[in-house]
Length: 375
Image 1 (cartoon, rainbow, N blue to C red):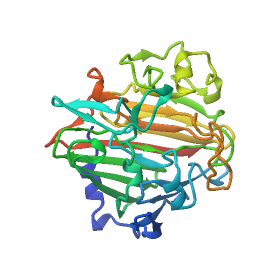
Image 2: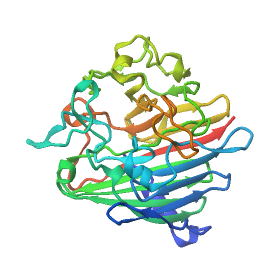
Image 3: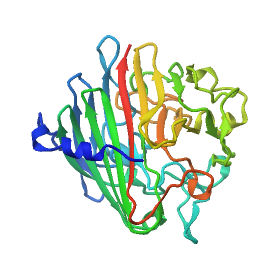
């Protein structure tokens, strides 16, 4: 999973700087008194991305529709207190292991590890998104960046050996860049001093009509994925890589989210709709197109490119109207969708899946790009 890290580093030299870096502004403090900062990134086309050091959360993302009118297209809250109190991972970086690990157990190099189980689909316990206090609930260090044609923030966090039950001290950086090419680029880099599973992803909920503006069932999806990983009733992969052809999971051509979300299919029943990992056609580790989403009313288009082998598509099946968002509107059933680029769920327990074990001396590098346009 190599990236253009050297090119990026060279671009961040003084000669390449063309503007002031985004300024850090106080956004409050956590219950233990740790200050939290927010950074606002902008580009020359009017796109604006606000992100904070708590959870490396994206607070808002404003993009224009086909008429040039901006709207905030990600779900979330107005205050830090709301994120601390109750959030289904709105806009956050999740890890050390994004997605699920069966029974909260895995082994590395013959040694067994046990994690907190904080999720129980179908009444079956698992560890979800890093455990009780994953990366979405810690305060990262934020460093403003500026380069020719882009503004950014580099978030860094050190996860200590034994944190949430995981082995090894993990040093992680996540860099957000907002470019004048209308791309939100995310670069991940990590090292460890003990072998450990790592599967970090971004968990923004999108609604291309604008957050608080109804459901996402009319969004049209196209995936570069001929297979997916079917799951048990506990939403743990069975190990099979199943062809999507002839199933409601076939997005090799464009389909609306709502077109087949009520299909009488065992997998749809298990997930309560779409909540599955797609096996991307691109398994090279090089950056490639994974998905295209079009919202017909606004004309907004979202393209997802990644070096990752998988992508979780979740269509807000657990949103139920109890959470009120930034615009003062409740977030009802299926009012946002996530496209989480990743390695496959439960990979530490699935030897046939691409490995998520990072070892000392190795450097994990991964890149995902969300590209915005309107037609």
